[in-house]
Image (cartoon, rainbow, N blue to C red; front, side):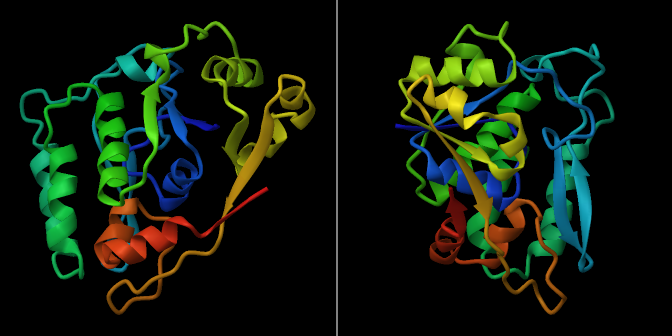
Length: 234
């Protein structure tokens, strides 16, 4: 059984979903510290031919707050949900797959979520369902009881609990893990690298590494599924 682990990102870029595609079970690490300025509550869209950030506002919290405890800021005067959905409509309504994809986005952004971890996890599930990616998703806070462990030690312990034979990590984590340490616990360590992904975006030069929203808007479902497979596993 192949296992992957990542923090919950909001509509992340396609490489994140490629990691989900490559494993049988995917752990959303929601009981680690929330990192301000990361990808948990923001990503990028194509606005006027260039990459532009969108952000889900969150309430003030302790600097060491866990992702699962960080609340979305929907306080008085906060109309960010409607504004974001309107922005997506304005800039993607002429995209080939807008009619099929917008309801998915609206379901997440307009959903009854009060915590950013829940909204981010919903964005992962909705896209996987849309692309028929058969991966089981579990929150780390609900399953393992090993939050006291750190880094590689915690990953290996999670693999043992899941009885995983293989652990797959994004290529950026190569320096963080020792293949020998994993093998000592009966686990094979793999790294996934995304191959170049490019597709037409209206009549502008291609802008890479945007939110998966962009990928889905410009690609029919079958083609988006093919893009999920454009990675190498070593």
